[in-house]
Length: 134
Image (cartoon, rainbow, N blue to C red; front, side):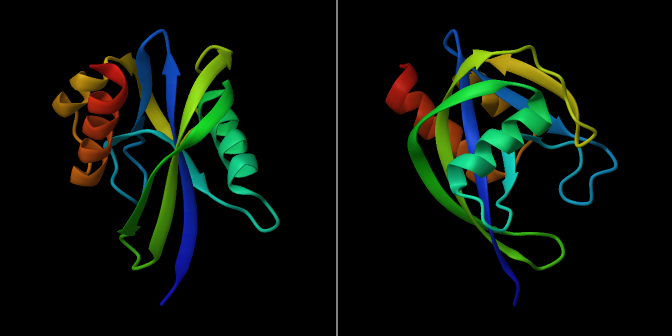
């Protein structure tokens, strides 16, 4: 069985969070909404990986504030991923998406319930909203 480690970021700006829509051509959950992030490369720390992924996927500079959640999921190809979600504060930049995503939105956290995504991310954003937003 193949395992990997992923990092995700709840990027915050002016009380809103950034969500991105996976490209229609993606081989894992196309057209689903998610937070930015991805896998950790060899010899990379989780912080380094998340900073790289946020820049690659959204073109933003962020400050990583703290770990928020630990999660796991099974990819469509059978790989098991263990993930860490960090809270991140936007520092600067305008969103410029990579080819991995087709859209982005800055939303109020409680709006995420209206977007197509995986149940675990809906729970994570709900937990974030209850702890930091209400």
